Length: 520
Image (cartoon, rainbow, N blue to C red; front, side):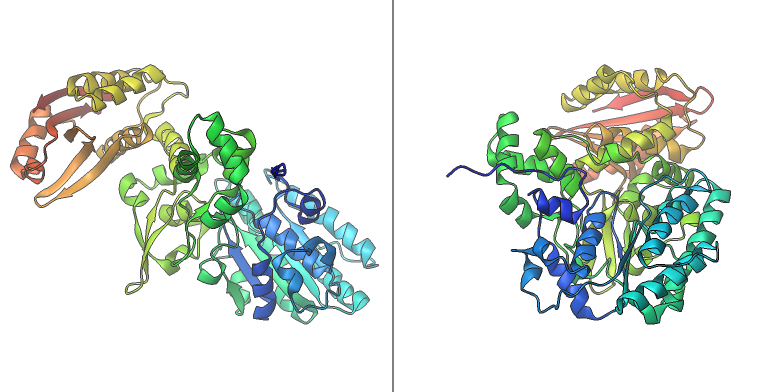
């Protein structure tokens, strides 16, 4: 039997178009049923960009509009539901970048004009908050049914202006006035469902709505967006086979490639691993592994916040946190760990039920490459396009057990930077080494613990171990003395791999590596 051609919904977020054109759809209508059965009035869902939030809101829209024909054969089709249409107001804030203060007014005015025409509203007040309130009441009165309000990327104007104080405060005030209608117009509202990247703790929508149901961390809704392993293997066999053929590997290897690059997200304590839907769809459509999610938005703002916090990068990227500290975010003074989690650069690795804490991690290779590439620009000011041959030499030297060649290549790497090194303290110097090693795929651990102290940088391969002590305006001899004094090598006494001990000095004045010594 011939397998039907798969039509991937690349960039298509409208449920109706997707169903009418026969595009691939992973049935998420089970979660529509859960929301309806819950009986709540206000819901919020946080997920990273390009994770299917817009498609889910579109699914809600057509469900509440009663367009049952679009749901034939799906889970919700068998629901005990009258399918009578509700008035639906979808406030899509994902249509602009909001670089200027007037942009939100333009988006709102276009939406409100359409609704005012549809529900026969005479515009008397030019205030957008008052216009929205009037529209909600009119829609209820004209149809006889309470209004369903769907807000797509409610925080988009704020996230886009994190580094622009005046714009940020302008949009914060504007959005607060719009969202205040959710409480004041409650009698006219059947459901409000908001999505966004983060739960912004200082926006009134969260403080005013005491009965807001934030389902972002609920195990019941863990798989509401994204692709599970089960969904991948049941719906994407043809695409995986095509990918395997193009990569000259078998089906299992292709699945492993998808897992390493796009899996690893976990959004709730007991949730399953989730694949990035945007990256999977693009990968299988094009038949090649690529950095598709990274291409939709650079991590520059996130990397800048992490760099500005002057933290131990490895510690931040392997943090242990109380779960409730990840649910709210002050965007103006965001903790870098919470910001990294909310934007998808960190995800839940494990959960401790006794302490209600989660261990965080970078989810997969695609995210690691995008984040670390942008981070390196801040710590080392490397010009994009820095010689790949030098990086390759570093990798080869480490894997071949040639520490002298490794250090020469590292020296050449830093010395070849066309701008001044951004190494104004020892912590940045350590971070730069760790970021570079991780970016090029080396198993590197900064501040690795032993019984006697912490190794500055530990690199391990299948055949070799490198213990590296980094000194800032010191000497290689001082570094080697510390390794000996702290007995760092004792931890590896029974290890059969060859061990190299390296003392490195970095000069703040010369802004480069200035001397090293190697013992084996």
